[in-house]
Length: 210
Image (tube, rainbow, N blue to C red; front, side, top):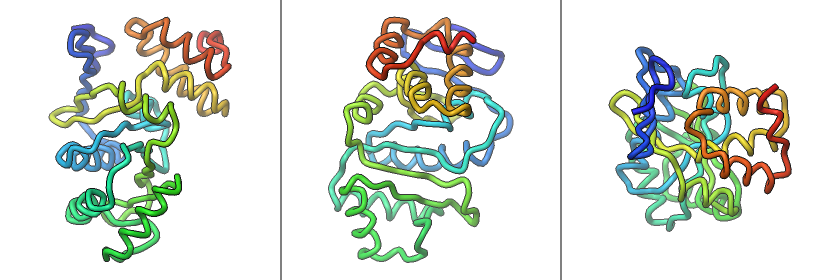
């Protein structure tokens, strides 16, 4: 076991990061509740974007938690929505839980659009979900990393891809997210994979050291 911080450890053999949190943020609560249902329904997924750095302690907030899920059938999506509704999730733009509303959401996903779910009474933060449509989306799921948060489990895109993609997005916030993850996990990152993703996305790895 490799100790990253007092609350984060890396199980190199099983490729699992363990995070201990005394208090969960709203982003944590929503991410874990949504992941719990995806795990139970055997839907493959990965969490990407800003929440990944927040999960590991970066001090900022996010309006959403981004999930990429495998392409599933309408029937499986309807079953997933049923479980989500029972757990307290609902579509952001509709309080309706009818089959027609579920079909409309599914067709949006098929077109490559994102859909949003709120949790409880709060519109923000919410879950933004999309089907895996690009090569990077699919790799995020296929090579996802398992994270143990206290007694729960969620999955994130590979850290090397996450860091490179954040540099590719290029905003000050995204670059700082990339630097945060790089400095925190520098000792366990696969340098060759990180360099490969930086080359493919045409970003400068040296930005991480500044």
